Every structure is written in C-alpha cells, then in structure tokens.
Image (cartoon, rainbow, N blue to C red):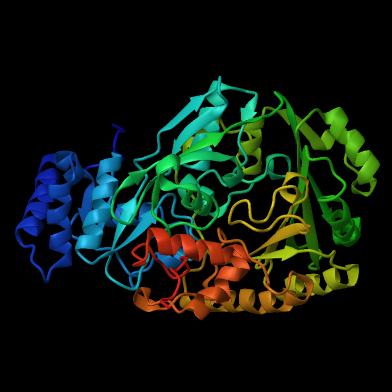
Amino acid sequence: MAMAFIPSLPSSSFLAILFIFSSYYLAYCASSDNDPHGTFLKCLYQNSTTAGSISQVTYDQTNYMYSSLLDLSIQNLRFQTPNAPKPLVIVTPVAVDQAQAVVRCSRESGLQVRVRSGGHDYEGLSYLSGVPFVILDLLNLRKITVNVENATAWVESGATAGELYYRIGEKSNSLGFPAGVCPTVGVGGLFSGGGYGMIMRKYGLSADNIIDARIIDADGKLHDRESMGDDLFWAIRGGGGNTFGVVVSWRISLVPVPETVTVSTVLRTLDQNATALVHRWQYIAANQFPDDLTMRITLQSLDGTDGNRTMQAYFQTLYLGRTDDLLAVISSSFPELGLTREDCTEMSWVNSTLYFAGLSGQPLEALMNRSSNAKIYFKNKSDYVKEPISEAALEEIWKWFSRAEQGALVMILNPYGGRMGEISESAIPFPHRAGNLYKIQHITAWTDRSAEVSAMRVSLMTQFYQFMGAYVSKSPRSAYVNYRDLDIGKNGDSGKTNYQQASEWGRKYFHGNFDRLMKVKTAVDPTNFFRNEQSIPPLPLP
C-alpha cells in the first residue's frame, strides 16, 4: 500500500486526529436519505475493504485540513476563490479499492464525482462543479514501476510527469518518454488528452505509447485492457479525462534516447530579424528538420531601456544527438538563425526535462516537486496552423502585443511533422496529425487578484483569439482538449447534454472521432455518470 499524503498536523496532533474521527462519526450517524453527504460517508466506510485507512484520507468541510488539501492542486488562481463551488468531500485513496468505493458511493448518494490527478485542467473541471460533488483526488496513487529490460513502466494516474521522468532517469540514461514540459502536470489528465512534449516529433504523443491501462467503470468495477475491450481502450487514450471512468494506472512503452542530447535557446528581437526568422521557421520546423530535432518558439513583448516596445522570439531546441550534428543540421536548413556552439549545451535526456521546465542547474529531485511555488491567474487557448502565416500578418500580430500591457500576451508555437504526421488521425481520439505545421498555445497570465484585472485579461484573450481566426485552421477551428477552453462550447447542466451543444466543442477537439467517442460513451456509461462541462455525452435516445 502506498504511503498517504496527509498535510502536516499541528503540535496538538492528538486532539486534531480526535476531532477528525469525531466529525466522521457524526456524519456517519447523521446520514439519511435526504443527506447525500452523510449517505456518501456511510456507504464509503461500508464498501471499502480498507475501511479503517479510508477514514484517514477522507476530508469533509468540517475537517481543518480540507481547505489546504483542496487548494494544494489548484494550479489556476482564477478558481481559488471563496465563491468557487466546493466539494462536499475530498477523498485521496491509497488503494484502488478505495477509489472504487468512491465511485460506487458517489453514484449511490446522487453526487457527481470529479477526478483530480495534478489539478492542471485549464478551466478547473477536475475540482469544480455546479452540482453537489465529491473530489476523487489521486495524489496518493502515484506509484511508478520501471522495467528497463522490457522498456516499459506502470504509472499510477496520480504521478506527475516530473516524477515519471525522475523514475526513468534513476533507472536508465538511455530511455525516455514523450510527455509534457511542465513537470507538475498529473499523468492521469495528460495521458487522457494526448500529452505532447519535446520528443513528440520522434515518438508521437504520450497516448500513442500506452499499451495497457486499469480503469474503474461507472459501476465501480476494475478493468484492464483485455476486459475493457478495444473501443474503450481506444477512447481513453486521448478522448479527455473524467468521461469514461477513472483510469488508475497506465502501462507505457519507454522510448530509446541517446545518452547525450543537445539543448539550446536563442533569443531574437525585431532588430535581429525576428519576424523573418519566425516566418521561415514555419516552412522548415515540421517538414524539413529531422525527427530527432524539435525547435519551438515562445513569443512575447518587452519594453526596452529606450522605452520602445519590441518582440522577443525564443527559439528553443532539443536535439537527440551531439552538438556537432545539430550545428550541421541548422547550418544546412536554417542558417538564418545563426546558431553557434556557445548557444548549445550537452546533457542527458532526463536533465533536458529540467532545462525545458525552467529548472536548469537544479538537482533531479526538483522533478519530484508536485506543486508549483509560483501559482498564477491565467486564461489560455489553443489553435492549429496548416498554412504559414505571412510576414505582413505576423506584423499585425505584433501590433496586438504592442497595444497590450508588456507581457500580457504570450504565444508558444510547437512544431508538428515527423512521427506526428505518420500516425492516422483515427488511431486514437487525438486527430491533429498530418497537415498541421504547428500548434499555438495562446497565453495571458497575471498576478493581480482583482476582479477588474481578471475581466480585462480574459477579454483581451477573447479578442485576440477572434483576431487570430483568419490565420489558423478552419471548419472546424481545431483545439487541443488538454488546453481546455469552455468558450468554444460546453454541455448542458445536470447531465442533460444536448447533442448539438456537445458537437460544437467536440468536433473542434476530436474532428470525426467525436462520433465514435459518443458510441463508446453510450456503451460504457449510458447514464452519463462521469461528466463535466466538456465530457463526451452518450448518444441521444432514438
């Protein structure tokens, strides 16, 4: 059994523990048909084979650790407010049977269940709901077992990408895994929506490299790949989280990486020909670079010492090989960038995950930190680009950056091509494959907690997104499900989802795969027990 994560007790720990168990006992005794909270707790203690320990990882609103546990994995401060909906109970199971009991008892007591892995859902859907709900927080289910001989690993859904990288790195310097740049992202949500990173062009998505899984269905039963069937196994690898059940663990194929890789970051401003360089990058990053090379761009504005605003373009590169080979590739295909040996650093693949997370120079143990120390408010969106944006259009984009507050807008351009263009768009639910040059993540982030600033930044992002519509994919305007965006559409309330409503957002995330996802949902969860504002609905009744 995994050791439970329990927030630190104060010095009067005996009295605190006594209070905790007293509150559970009172809730247990007070349960009735009109008290879903008490009914849930009573059911939970009766249905878990580890009833004694489940009481130690069950927190209701009378528990003094409730708030700190709720806030621990809230990554977007927009949703950490007094008025945000709060769960009746948070359960952090240390065993799979406890997670099964949470599902059964939520259903029996008429409560919605929200499943949280790392808390990075952009719209907070893993810990918010408009109806009475329970949070099933998987942070204690984070065991990782790496098998170097078979190049596989079992990863529980509460583990973070950073924890996965660390465990791979401590066992091998020649194995890696294609997952996210942010180390605090939970693998449960990351894998469920696809999951991409700096070796995506070589090996595809996280979800492309999943070979088995264990999932709890709407009846609380546990399945592996064989018992869940091909359709459900297809759906959970990219069809979005909190939709088909609770995936508690994943078996993944690890991928070979050289013992030495090369990283670089090159900054160019408008005076250093940034516009022409970004324009040229669009033609080569996906279609001319070898699969071993990924070069992404981060765009932001900066006020110079002379008071003038300029654009900064950061060209960040990971090359699965040595510096000499990288320089030869860039010299041949992108000499305009002016990459030099001094720009390059050689390191192990696992150390490159620190580099791209902004943790250069820190020990590998930094990957084990589950929570960001600098949480912010943000509103992000996504787009896909199929045709290069002209230099003139790029200059129009720069004007938006110039009119906004310094740093108020950021764009990250992630190249596709390589392996991503070789996999069929229907191989898994994630459809964004051949024909996409790159994906854009639009970002606006702030630290001011005032409602006025939040409204202003959200409005800025809405307007900028509307402006960008002329330059990105159309019919549908594609989006990435792991960059959740309720502005593109959402389901009806109380699970009464209108098919037309769901199609609005569903086809933007999944294209033609949306229809198959609904068929799977109808087969495995026809009553729509697992649901949120953007979960796949079952097919409408004839």
